[in-house]
Amino acid sequence: MNSVYSVSQVNSYIKRMFEQDFLLNRISVKGEVSNCKYHRSGHIYFTLKDETGAIACVMFAGSRRGLAFQMKDGDKVVVTGTVDVYERDGRYQLYAREIVLEGSGLLYERFLALKAELEEMGMFASEYKQPIPSYVKKLGVVTAPTGAAVRDIQNIAYRRNPYIQLILYPALVQGEGAKESIAEGIETLDRLGLDAIIVGRGGGSIEDLWAFNEELVARAIFNCRTPVISAVGHETDTTIADFVADLRAPTPSAAAELAVADIRGILERIAGYSRRLHTASERSLAYWKDRVAAWQTRWNYLSPENQIREKRQRLLDLENRLQEYSGRILTENRHRLQLLIQRMNGLSPLNKLNQGFSYVEDVNGRNVTSVHQAQPGDELLIQVSDGCIRSTVHSVEEKIREQAVCEEA
Image (cartoon, rainbow, N blue to C red; front, side, top):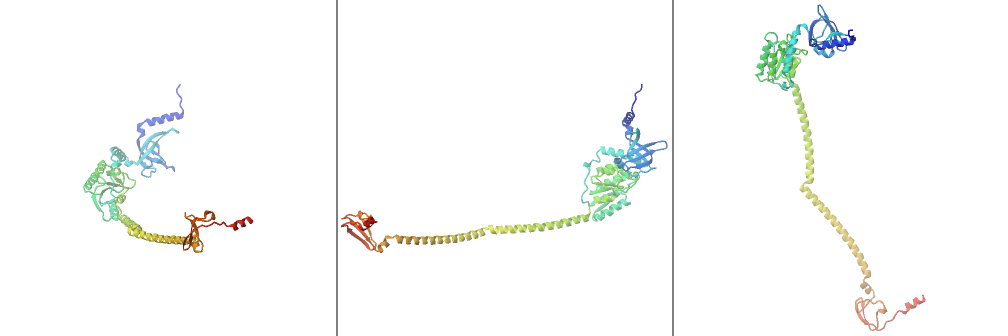
């Protein structure tokens, strides 16, 4: 009995078969667009058909950058993507990554092939990109001598900087011999020692812009020692020259704005810098004036002359204070001396003698204050106010009256 499989198993098997097919992983299909619907999520659903068949297609929102035009029913297009199975419904469809109009499909394939080859060789690497000088004085232009591109570059360049020198190499930018003419123009201007070169032209179809997708032009830009700005077509147009150039501008007008500095803005910045410098100088001058004044004040305070004058004044103050203190101490001591003199005068024996008292002492100089200290025959000295009397004791009498008074009491 044959094996029995579920629907999901069959769909999964078919999906794996599609995924393993190398041709279906990267395929380009041409046909007419029908039932084209732009979903609000950003996805595009459409059918690609020819005289005998049709295939369902979808371009997810993340791949929309691969669509450079507004697609509609009836367009003849070449869709590049992957054929895969939507496993849930068991139907296959083309998942589009890039969509171009049919007339440019073959050229676009050549474009992708050359782009991949040059990228692999490293010609698009950022380390080879040269910076555009900030102030370009000599600007070379490789473009057609007639047309909007050269006029736009001239008008914008002279408006931004009237003193810039433009050197035009009149090149063929379309048709037979265009790639040789553009490459020769780049090499010629590179030998003139310019500051930068603009290579470009106005917009057009992929066939019109094809000269800028040639390897000869790409190598001329890559080998150019002068910084190159690519300005081919409109903002949505992209060429090989854009990837090789040191800087890509979306339009020739934008290239002129990127290459030529606005002298009015520079002059305004210089004026602003001048005003800021003037203001800063005034502030700095005022600051240093204040500092000098402070240093002058400090110098006046710390100068030797001022220090001497200060010390001299302090010495005079100390001298005055010393004199005042000495005078006060002297006055106090004099007052104390007077008090002591008065006290000494009150206790002086001489004053007592002057008042009629006398002082008695024996021959040994001892003061005799009692009758018991003297015996008959002792010699005594009697001190009086005007001299000394020598006497001999004849008899000693004790005071009986005081003793009797004491006994009665």
